[in-house]
Length: 83
Image (cartoon, rainbow, N blue to C red; front, top):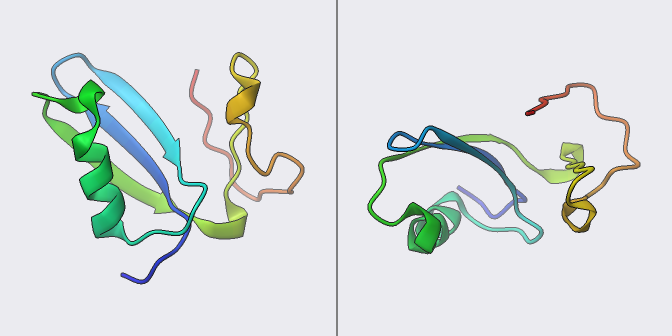
């Protein structure tokens, strides 16, 4: 459980929403878990979270929200797309 960059996929059962999250700073899983649970958007909801990856193999691209883009010039061997 050493500190690393993290990539997570979360799902809220009550409203069926998916959340794709990438940390910009290294953290432990218990730290990011506590942070996620403290966010107002998840208050009172059943939350399923999957740790996908992290580190330099992580990238995020958003056409609609370019301020969220991270590591977009890196060649990534696997793509998870959410529309």
